Image 1 (cartoon, rainbow, N blue to C red):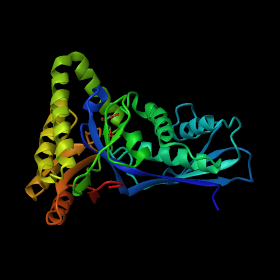
Image 2: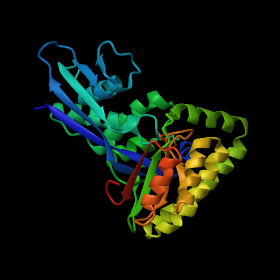
Image 3: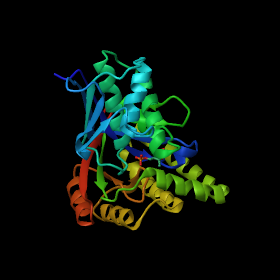
Image 4: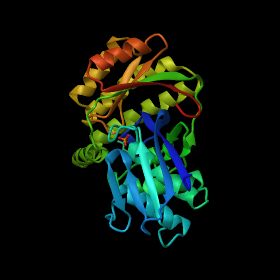
Length: 315
Ligand code: PMV
């Protein structure tokens, strides 16, 4: 019997990535097909807290881990928040089915699972806001300047209209819709894409601010269309958002090829999702187009495709 357990879903950004770092809104939803899980076991062989990252085959001792180690930081920050000064003799076991560095929020979900498992081992339940804040602190170590959208969606497990620095607004989904999420197979750390956009913005702020404003207009239009259940309107908005991300320099040949393949196979629209330069592409599909779009995406090089229903709670 574990002392405590925690889980958190993956997420996709529907609209607004990158511009969200500069104060514009973004829409993001949880994805229930992929999860991070953590559980805490009591250790009798040692009195050290250790972390067992199953997927990486890595065992980490909390006292030896560097200050910026993401898993160790999630444990340290949670213990600190719970007021536990001396780390107990626990093993925190972590496992995730969310592909790493692919735009599905794996880092944030793993952190959220750890935060929840450690709190539950200490017989405490943290408010969602606190889980989100702790995950944000860990995300800062990977990203530098995360907007906060990832931690918010994985902690709240709800579709969120997100503006940096403002309380997250869960949004209404007038009618559920289907997305195909294709993994390009290219691992692309968000920090690098975000850093490149920052450099370009520093060189020509007016040009990039104008692109961010156009992305914000797409996000607002998508927000309205989703609320009134006009899913079909999202396709063209995805295409526009993808083109704006191309202008920001965060797409790549493979993502553009996947987007074209999805559209040719009948998707209503397609865009990269997350940091870009690799990671995921999302395409708007229906019950009729899901299968042909999925097979076209695989033929065009997608490593994996998930078809998910975007609904009120978990997608
Ligand atoms: O690559 P992901 O899924 O972590 O998403 C990054 C989203 C960005 O807008 C590019 C960065 C951020 O902090 O919001």
